[in-house]
Length: 212
Ligand code: AP5
View 1 (tube, rainbow, N blue to C red):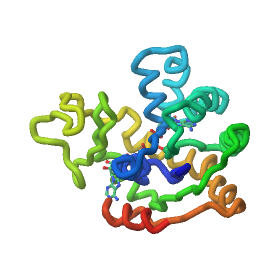
View 2: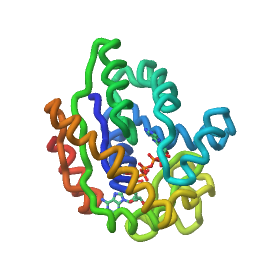
View 3: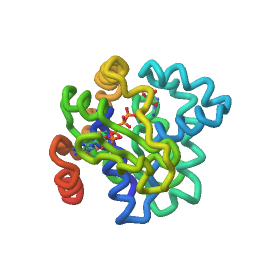
View 4: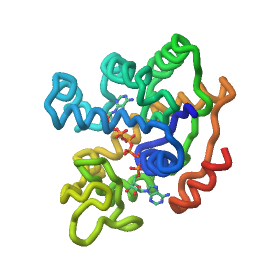
């Protein structure tokens, strides 16, 4: 299984990838999580990426492509992968195709989670995440435990992401519509795009995903 999860910020890509991973032995590769880890460890990549991320802009293609290349061709992805948040631009999509071709393989499907902008703003302003393990919560739909400890890793490290303010979310949406949405046509023209309604409850979206 080699999938790309496409969709605006807050469409539920990370949430659904985590559910699929529970049922199948595939790697969940989130470029956002990888970048946040680099920011946390203050690596050269993290230092360079931070300002772009804080403003809701995309990190330059060459940094992202270099970061992901090793991961996709590594052992962790041998049984398949879900790419969550990558590719996000045409050069990234082309680089991914070229890398998979070098590896003698190709993508199975690109899944587009269709969610309108106002739903995105509402979901992301109420999102909370565990800064240790990346588990995703939502104050309204999936609240964190009352004792504040993550139910996945047990650490008291549930926080609001710095880029989940309304101002930055609206910037990320603009970036999505201008730079990432063209990939819908890219994958449609290759005959591998599946579009699904991402606005229903989490389990309903997972059921739609299972049909694809
Ligand atoms: P990234 O971390 O990838 O953020 P994003 O794409 O903006 O996506 P999100 O993580 O915000 O949303 P999601 O779709 O995973 O939604 P989630 O499942 O959490 O990127 C962050 C930044 O890193 C970028 O802005 C950029 O700077 C940089 N970056 C990353 N990749 C890059 C790349 N390839 N190129 C360049 N730069 C890159 O769900 C959201 C909320 O909704 C949660 O609270 C969840 O509980 C809730 N929810 C989910 N599903 C449902 C449902 N069905 N019903 C109700 N609530 C739901």
